[in-house]
Length: 326
Image (cartoon, rainbow, N blue to C red; front, side, top):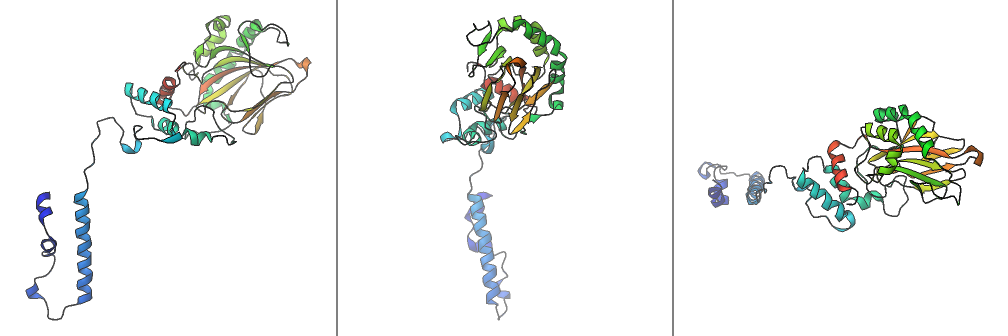
């Protein structure tokens, strides 16, 4: 049928639509005839353009089409090639299903991280688009894990007392502890960037057991940490951004002297001993212990949890893409 249609001429197409010339009246109406001819010419042109289009190429089942396919050409600074290769490798092993936001995030990292511009939220490593954002999250968003940590508060505090030592300047660093960028800030990691610190976990078995009971603890990629965090009086940590918006940091207050303050996204908050505070640290945040030396250090137990709106397939892919050592 298409070959027959292609052989038609304009005359052949128009002849069935026009009246027999033998029946025409002696008084034609030129304006109507011209408009009718133009309309038929337009119909003929549309037909020729339509039949000249190439049929779309079919895709194998399960492979995204051009519009949503991560395989399309991506240029310039719009993509981190290493992350894209990791996502592609993951999809080959498993599936592209559910990877739209991850692909979009990898493709547009330069845009989301805003380069050198100051912003209220600017994760330093990876931004997943279309996630609800807020400096603080309600307890209900991670109710199960919050309740586990709060019920474990006495055991976690007791184990901290067993590993704490003198943090005065010049004193030898206690085993398992590390000094951070500020000399008045120390951490004791059970998990650091997705890797379990076995010796420290053995020193805190009840705390390790509580971590194992959490449903959303990040323990398989470099965004996941769990640690005791100690801030000495007079210590102020300057504003900084966390690495990603795909996590929520759970702060369990162990020792909170007066004068301790956390500001996230311009919103100040205070800790309470025995209770959890959920923080999105991809927002600009500062921490300060403005108390006197007699107040003693501030002690917080921190565990990184998945953002509640990161789907299961996305979590699995992020664990693969950001696996420790990758």
